[in-house]
Image (cartoon, rainbow, N blue to C red; front, top):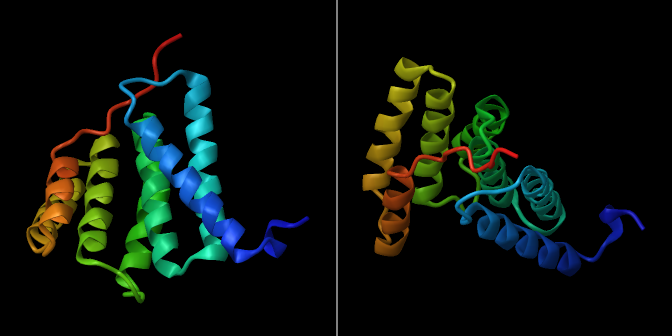
Length: 160
């Protein structure tokens, strides 16, 4: 059975389940190399299921998650590819986009560029992420963004 023919409800179930697993793994203080590969697979799988169960905003957020995964695994080059896609989708102004989506799209660009040593280019995204983060209306969303803004997405892989 093709994933395209799965019921939308089934796609939604797996999209949510895999997304939750991504954040569970990212919360660990370190990952084995095997868990790193699993994390990449799970992030892509969640995003794939959202293609059939969600809307454009789910794709925007999914590309953010994939960028964050690659950055957290110490691969800013791969992360930047998805960060650029996230920012591009964000600028399209799709239905359902929230104030925090704009802040996060700039935040991930900043951290990817910083990870590549492109400090000058990164700074403009950092400033914009902070500006947009300050405009987040919901106090809980703002608190989460502020925490993420101050967090370095370090290489979680343990050396084996």
